[in-house]
Length: 265
Image (tube, rainbow, N blue to C red; front, side, top):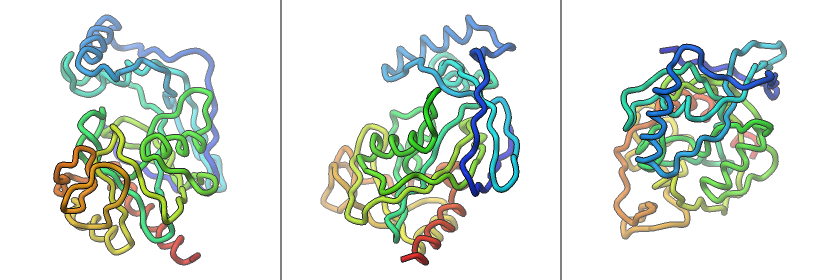
């Protein structure tokens, strides 16, 4: 497994798009197809769309980075984790994704992933996140993901602040800073079961403990139980759920951004 990596950015990354379509050269395509068919039978949400596979990365000076990418079918990525068709089959696909660190100036937004998602089900993660589709701009994709995953509108543009490699999800992620209105409330959908808003002190405690417990403020639109826990089903929240490894990678970035946001207020 590759080690986690994080590169601080001072300007947006440059995507160099290669011609053609990436097909893994060292795997049996019949085996991939059989596993994909089993995965689709178990999860009707599975869709074999196109993603961008990262062929390589290089720094280009002055706080920037180049990403060489090529279009690839999602099925080659989906079978890289254990599933109904068998154990993980590494096809060598490393997709390009986006992550957001969303702040209202005082707090950052985190969410507990639902059991319906492919990666990190039941774990806490920074909201939002998603893949970059061919032809799309990463900064626009992360704004769209925020709207789709949490029903929130960004105030101003998304700013790229880091590039990281998540070895658990086999993905390269462009991390963006986003701002929302302090009065805005996230909306529960199918990808998250609970949201929290964490201030600077709670964010630091999260890094030490590795689980969210009673940290942060609950708030949003969705099932709200008698204890004030925001949960899509109205059931008590799983406060002891773990912190996703990629969220651990992002904690120092989030702490720095929140400190900067508070300094500007």
